[in-house]
Length: 128
Image (cartoon, rainbow, N blue to C red; front, side, top):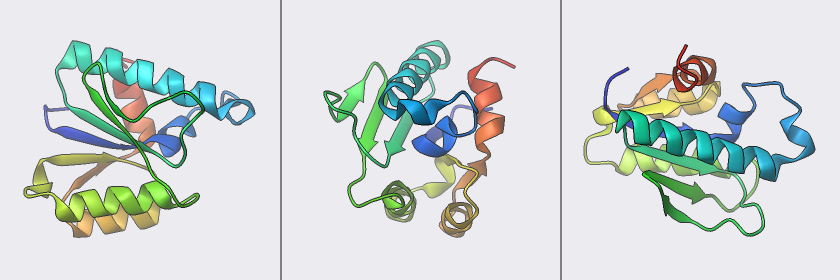
């Protein structure tokens, strides 16, 4: 996987691992951010991750090489934000969107971005 900019549907990626994350989604978000920070540090690949909500005490911004964004507006807010980011990007062909959500996949591919499934990226993230 080359050095393009990763744009990640955070909750979709979290959901790709059935580890009972739903019992503490805030912890799952924090753990994913740590995993992505480690990956960005090792690979040098730029990463933006978008979540549907913000856990208490977690702030928006850039954190150790990744951009963390939180969408307002409910369960599909991150999908809308990601689609908007692709369609507003000056060169969407440089983006690799991580999601297994079919409607989001269709929107971002129509906007010119490449899509990588959450399971495929999870294996990439874990070095498999």
